[in-house]
Length: 241
Image (cartoon, rainbow, N blue to C red; front, side, top):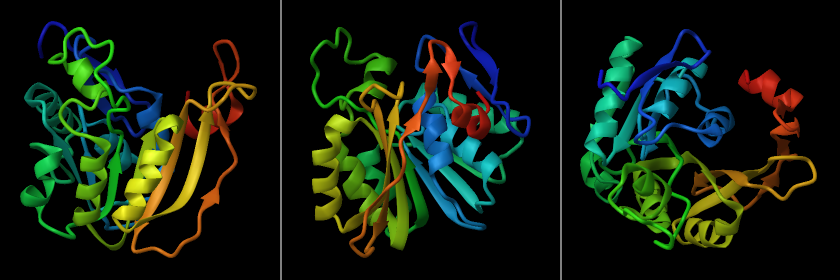
């Protein structure tokens, strides 16, 4: 391990992850997405933009999925993800591939996965970026791939009736819905995440089905905090915070 790396306990089935505060550490959004995504027994799962591998590691611990793959463009993050897979002795269930989301179809082939999950960069402009080559900027801003890249590649990689699960920001919903519609991925389920019950949502969780029928269910809101520093009962019960 490098001097600036640490090993964090994920508090589920003994799983641990290697992270570096100098690069990018996973947040609440990845944890919530891992609870929102549904993976059935034996299904193949791809995480587009896996970072240090948090989603494959959590989904492997939480579900009976057959195999999990993480695609990551930054070699240093992909290396940390691979070492975390080895740390958890899950080499038989999880693969980490270094590569570009824009080239995912060529890497994996069409209709290769039952489920695709993604926690893509949220910001669509470079405004405020002081170092566009920094790992944190790449993780947060659409510098190396766009929302359109993610959804179009997802459409090609999913099997017919395959499912995608995404966490994003509510202000991007018009773009998300337009692109999903263009790509034949039907939004089926949506849940807004609010920091407090009286605040506007800060995240949205979305399920889409390739070639699905047109019917969208909006689930009840998920509230993270009951008060300052006090997680809600649902967060404590379902996510272990």
